Image (cartoon, rainbow, N blue to C red; front, side, top):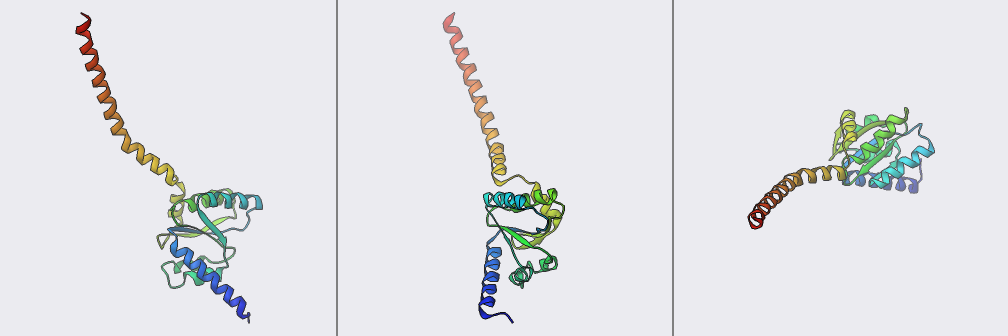
Length: 173
């Protein structure tokens, strides 16, 4: 039987993981076996830069963390090596980075994921992975909104130029 201090440490880990999951907008669970140290280091760096928290978690502890939540159905994938990536702000960052490595490394697999506290399919995770980053999406929206304004400004400028040319022509005659 484990000592009281070990049990207390495990309870703390479960509480921390449960809190992290509840505060996140999205998360992805992966099987990380077969990844080299160099790839793992590069992947963790990309995840950190994207604001994603990535940790290796024991299956039983992760299972306890999601017990009695909407994510409890993910316990069926908690076998083998397991890591979880969570994001508090970006819905696609974890899926985008982890999917890139899953495509590159045959034994590195995405097991499951969630959005806003609801489990999503692997197909949906792959769709999320293909979406551009939040910054790119925001710049695309800004361009869409600014295009009519820019066209209007060019039209007003063209009319003003035409009017000023027409006003100068009689003065020269």
